[in-house]
Picture 1 (cartoon, rainbow, N blue to C red):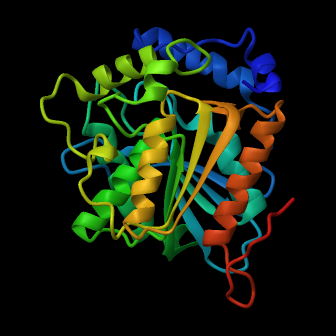
Picture 2 (cartoon, rainbow, N blue to C red):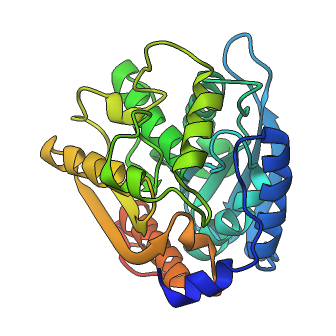
Length: 318
């Protein structure tokens, strides 16, 4: 593993997923240890609730709107990671604030319901409902309904991929992009990387086993909206960016999904990062983490942000 990442992780809280209550406490500690101060300058930030799925409670969201947007801003609906069991809006606050303040993107960060109290499909339904809402109400928060994307890391990447599948299948929001950061995709756990990485740091095979147990709740027959790698057809999906880490049990399922997207005719950019571990883009004290986050911002700008002449912008704001 990259020496800077290894040094940064030394002594960090480990979020094992066997016990959800302990995992949530450890995730808050980890997020606090990794987080850099965020001022929110350049973005208007609002916490609110929006209608949830039919018969379900409202969904809390945090909306980030660029302060100096001269035109309707592209919209990113973002889903946090945490193995479907932990995490919340605070985990992604710095990331989402940067996308809005520095890159001119309106972000809707979704606080979906967590397993095991709410196994699949509850969290997924929240995410899909939030995406539909963001598309229908984009103008109300300065967003452009014609440029709505989904994204997330780890479990959030799984939810983003699943929302994109459902939007395609049901003629839902016409998504223009999906950003999948080291996403959880395959409950079958039958890859070389899944067999190789059985110990910490951050996320390992044992964690994946507990994650799927909590999220699936013992269901028989796993649908593609729970584990997107099970989707028989990936054609017709929005363009994708897939970030893959070398020392991640999810590495091979991520590479396989990216390859399937490509051969299905989906415009796909895939970046496999040597020396990186799961969640490395949140470690700003390491060069690889900073580079990865800078690339994510650049990718979003290339795919979502239009300049004054209407062309997509391939630069990155400082």
